[in-house]
Length: 470
Image (cartoon, rainbow, N blue to C red; front, side, top):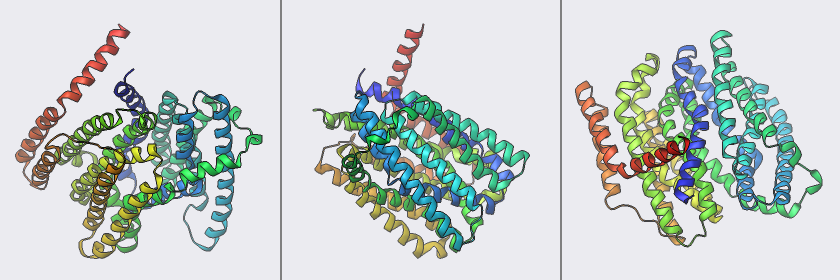
């Protein structure tokens, strides 16, 4: 199986699983905006934001370390068991320390749903770790099934707690925790992790090596959190929770693009780690970078072109202002495509310090722009700060990575991208249905022309699979 076909196969498997958690939550937007007022939804969004920040800090980004180390020893059962045992020891110790600190610190603050949030953090910690273990072991199908269980459970729990029991924000947070718990439980049983843990295999040298790899990723994780969602904290503090609810809805649409990228990035990071020392790696990474950039820039501009028709159907009128910030956030997500492509290469090269530095740079820019302009231009400041910080990170990594390898792009690709986005943005803010239909048609044609070779490859791939089945 060629590297590109292997990458495509893994991406499709992961997509089937991750679509349940990422995209089904998107289709729950009508439910959320109907049963939760802006202030309630803003609170839940803020809680989710802080959970995504806290979990990597608790684990010291251990899940990324265990994934990378397992990739190298998949066929060695003894080494695999040793890595998993030390992973579990570190995880339990870290969680115990955090729980103690959390209970002490929260005694001095009035925190709504204090124990429920702690429960959510613990569950998400195990869930995130077990998912990366599955990837490290090459159990892509089990990874996908776990995601499907989580996604389906989220829908059922949301309907039960929010619609029938009308528990509001409490019900939504509880739904997230229980759904992640079921997904983690599946992996714990399916991968027989209870057999893979042996405390007598404790190896301080191995732990030190894993920490050396993962610790530089902590500031990276914090910085990504700052770039992505520190806006929520500043918005809530300066403008109020209701504005954060509106901004959270704006983010839901570009999150589709980010989620698709995240799905690809899971298989891409594995492929990059496996082939980083190949003799033709520059050409391989260049080919993949071109395909991905063309596809995702097309998806981004397509989302902007579709939004005038989709937004009124999905979102309650009380969240209407969210419409104006979506294109800026989508543009930021497109810049993030290049960042994530390079991120996987840095990780494969084990250059985690470089990853941390560029992420911190983006975080600082994001905070400065937010603080300077949030009172003057409101939510536009939050949107622009995200897009600009991503743009700076993209440029820095583009030039910095040249020290390690040469990645080339198709001639004129960046100019075409700028022109089509300027075209789509112009028509987005026009209150004219016919002009917006015209824009949509042009974008569809552009997408097919730019990605024609990719679509042909996909057609041939599925055609061969259908022949084998037949």
